[in-house]
Length: 529
Image (tube, rainbow, N blue to C red; front, side, top):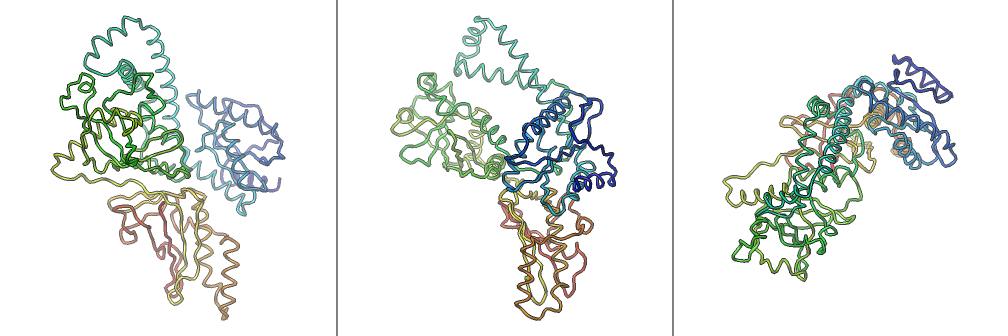
């Protein structure tokens, strides 16, 4: 209770109106709190009946905020103590999902944190002053998309229920005379109808157009998940190997089919001859025009790596797809490798195997790029969007002694994001990383004075080991000395090649921190994945 009292006092001093409950209060839909702080021990010995009651109560709050036109989801701060940190993280995730709280509105703070009360108050202040308004913009888009889709899907279902068999015959006879199969056409048609209906939903369109330049609030704050790669995969491919079964009659050669060579397993072909020509046997020389690509199996143990590879599809000539639980990347080599293959060879399962069928929109883009590459006049300039930071290194460098202390920050996943611009390079960092950097910098700045009067080199080494063992924990508010609010800005003089993928981005913080004696300075290095 002593720690909770510190939190209560800290929040009160920060200007929050705080109400303390020893048990779950009745939910008042007319008075949804902006911040909820919950204290539970997350371990195997915990009282999960009480935890279940809390998650049920919070899920009710989440459901109310989703249905309401005015309520805003509360920011949930779960404070907990547990012997095993990994167990705490797993239990916190279960708590968040059980309470139907979005990750952007949820943080877990372990009581073992030496700056426990300060961190809770700091997260609450950051949310209230910086994140709340911007998060609400994205939450409105989420609500608009969910509600718009549910309404549109219901309308389409009613339309399909009203279909007569004569309508299907009309589609098949009148619209598909020289085209593909009826299922392809109906899937495309209703996909277009869904798009049209979504874009007529006022709440969704209004929310989507109301989002400003606010991505700095979210970038680098949370671990990426596999939802984005899954969406890209579903959008890119119409059929997988399991779906293109011969008994369904889908294994005939058509536009956008992808084939893998059994003789050279790393070679992939995308058929870009038009389906109508293939079906109607209008290709008199028995040759299918294909774009050749190189196949690589991806190591996607880290979700961040899969996310980066997926987003690279936007800027690079790659395609990511999945077969079962394995992910593969196809490098189209600048779309310059065109070849023709006999239809009979593609049908020969001793030579080629059908991987699946690419979404025609993506296949048409590759086809057009290949045609442009054949008849191009100049080369396009590919923009570079984002680099993901995996590690941060902070060093104290003395003019006479060189590098005397270094500390690295790494969570084994994404710890921040570098976004290059024409004139500079922005770095977006999550709040807990900014706090850790501030603590490390405070300790490193104080280190030269601590080393004075210690003539013995062994004593110096012992002192450095002691500092390292303490994890460079220190008190101080470096946010007054370096603006960590929206990340650090790297000027051209401080950055290292961001034209392509940088090996590292380095800045010298000598002008941003209190003056150090004898030309001492701090070096901060951001290492991308």
